[in-house]
Length: 130
Image (tube, rainbow, N blue to C red; front, side, top):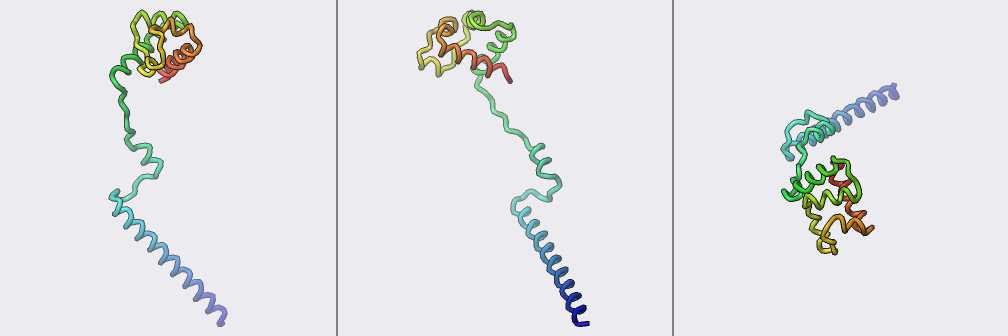
């Protein structure tokens, strides 16, 4: 009989510890939520991140204009030297960084050099992929 009483007391003690632990965790969670100031949690973390407002980064006006011009020329489906001739015809300025690196002053001239050809193609790809 003592064995049965010990088992019963042990089970009761374990239940009490579980309840105390659950109560403690619940109180601690409520305290942390109050500290953070978010109020009660009603959404899962996935829902919160999905509904969180995404910060938008505005590009500079001169870059928006360049991007628009490059996209318009790309929509003509011209490539290589014809693309560069169209860029020169519309007076699309090169990126400012290129000017400091020895820009040949026109897209048509730059396209003859493999270094600049790669940069021109990469820029066209970056500008038109969005």
